[in-house]
Image (cartoon, rainbow, N blue to C red; front, side):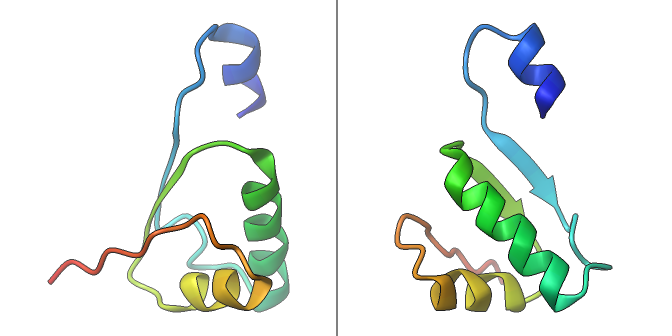
Length: 69
């Protein structure tokens, strides 16, 4: 993410696909808090429900949940 800030002039979304499956709850909460505060658009694909639960508990309101069947 730091490299993209240096190399690219325009802001691009962050796309994460099951990136946090091996994270424990504490580490996951920490990284989700950092992402929420970053101001970047984040597309997070996951088979887990815990990310949305943590974001809701943190009070993050500017996120959308789309469930794919």
